[in-house]
Image (cartoon, rainbow, N blue to C red; front, side):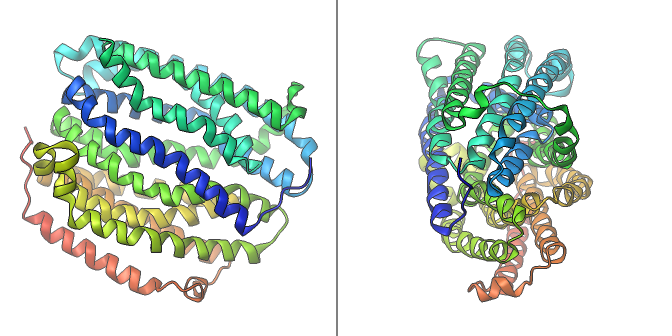
Length: 469
């Protein structure tokens, strides 16, 4: 196997593939969600949203190993040391399977507590909720092992193969509920269909890995790799534990302080507008193994070049889109989800749009710090942000309902972005002038962002929740 090469053309191609891989399921979801809402109802859809949030959170049992395997396989390929790949793969996959089963057991045991005491679930949905959460336990080991095999292909820059599996798999998350509704299935039946699709995706990942890396057909575990994997993955795990809380805390507070219907009015625009970050995530998915390989050979000049160029392109592409969403938020929601969402969620969409722009550029320093072996820095920032976000979210949701939740999230991502950029410049000894020399008016962006937050705050003061109990 030849040494891995990093080029701007290759990164552009991979970014396009990743973008297609994310935007196709998104487009399907946008079309499908209104029909799913009508078929399931607002309360059941809110329950399904929370169920997937819980499943996503339990992927913390990954312990950062999917990220670690991508980094170390990319480093090995960058140095021309492909013989290390089989032991890296099977050691990681074995650990992932064990951890996934452990996570499944824990979720199964706490399901009664979640359904009966933690979440504000109506009595009529208790049985469906309990069965749904039990079924979701089966998805934890499937998702963890899949992420390992996907990470190996990403390290090899085979994003064409990764997306050939992820596109149909992720699309099924939206299409199979429609199939289930047409077939007369209830919520647990729909979840079973989605889990079957996830399992088929795992089988496909394994088969393609065997074709690309013929060496890994031979099972090989090296316990000596454990410290190396867990040392890196440990800090990634901290981010994996705290980050979902930061992302989903608002929804749990809304569910506790307001209602399941409020969760739906908040989650639908949140899930839609945050999908704009696929532009940035498509790029950073490609950049992470590239950053890892370049760090492995010590090419800091290319690291700085790709970092600054990426920030510039994300801003150039996203800024006009975000402005359009903010200006026409009510009209967009009316055409997509109807007058109810246009009335209740328009301000939410406007506030979140500003946050998405700030959060999208933060993906780049986050990926760079992890790719260069400093996953501890983003993790420490997340720990700092957690109590701050909880306090702000609690206050704002109590006073402004779902609009307050949107503002709390936007404040948090703005703080996170500032900290990540500051750390990147200091720790990696990169000059902020890189952003300017690449044609980025960074100071103007910060000033306009500050003005946007102030304007949104004033707008929020005139808005009070209509759906608080």
